[in-house]
Amino acid sequence: MSASRLGVGFIGSGFNARFHMLGWRGVRDADVLGVWSPNAKNAASAAALARSLDIGQAKAYTSITAMVADPAIDAIWLTGPNQARIENVEEIVHAIREGKGTLKGIACEKPLARNVSEAAYITKLVKSVGLAHGYLENQLWAPHVEAGKTLLWARGAATTGRPYLARAAEEHSGPHMPWFWNGRLQGGGVLNDMMCHSALVVRYLLCKPGEPLSTVKPVKVTGHIASLKWSRPHYTKQLKKSMGVDYAKTPSEDFASVMIEFDTPGGRAIGEASTSWSFVGAGLRLSAELLGPEYSMKWNSLDSGLQLFFSREVTGRAGEDLVEKQNAEQGVMPVVPEEYNAYGYTGEDRHFVRVFQGKEKPLLTWDDGVDVVKMLMAAYQSAEQEKTLAFPPRGLGTFVPAVAKGTWKP
Image 1 (cartoon, one colour):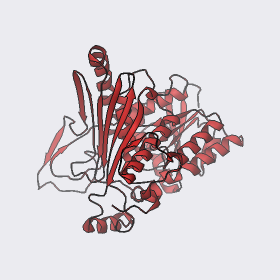
Image 2 (cartoon, rainbow, N blue to C red; image 1 turned 30 degrees about the vertical axis):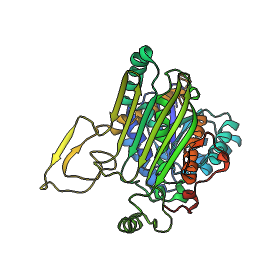
Image 3 (tube, one colour; image 1 turned 90 degrees about the vertical axis):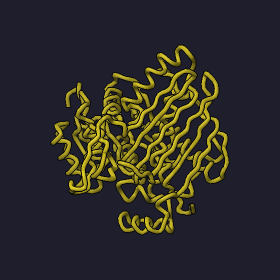
Image 4 (tube, rainbow, N blue to C red; image 1 turned 135 degrees about the vertical axis):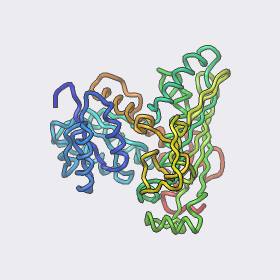
């Protein structure tokens, strides 16, 4: 690998890794050169996709250690499932400690871990070998979020005062893979899966550009979780058949909301976030709002500007060629062109390539990922206790949600 280019290896070969690869066509000075997955066939398929996209001569590796040991690999993108996070990081760190390879950095997909204890542990591990680290949160790089925040702070906040209310939501009909639905494996339900996006987005929008997230300090958290759809008998049977999980016995929440009160340099601000696996609509919907004394912004990913219509006579195989988590192929359908760019994947990957090349300072590190997990676990604690909690609540460092234990009952 030339000194001017970054060689990147992926741990994980599924939906998320492939979204990154699609977005990689807009990334300069870096090549996807490797993929490891516990499923060798999937690893080979993902590597073939990278080659077909002309983003690097990727090959499948037989182990994480082998990928780290290859001098061509300079950085790792960690996109595997939540339950494998610890063992994946342990193998990376062990390989570096044993002198089997060196890396310039590691980037990890959301959430950083399933609970605060796990998040703190893996962060300590990567720091122990001096490894630069970045937390992958694509929605902060969504072009609409970036542009809206920049303009509102430059024009509205600069003349009339800081924003005081941010809202964010992510909603769709349910995850792609069985492990997401399993609270013991994933670490929870939709709150752990997707609130990591929305809780961080509201904090980010309320933070003045150029200042650290720590200037927007969470002080109170009110969380609520529910199983609105997938615990109903008809859908429980459907879910058991399609995903192999039994929500009649061990349900996970399919709806979550959280209100976070923040102390900011300009006074108290509020963040409202909600997430859902029970959304009925065209497909994945992301939204955000920011309000201040004399200004506001709003974004809805399904207001894409492009719509198609298909009559009943147009039939074919179900797919996701119009929008992620697509629920229909007929009628009026919004289309999100280049979803990987619209959702921020290209922007975040471009940023962290430059970070690991020493050209930029990281916008998000694993320390920020730990902070996100703390907010998620505080929301679970609040939901279980059915009251607002001061942040950080007692016992946060060792708390495991009842959903993750398999003991939660809606």
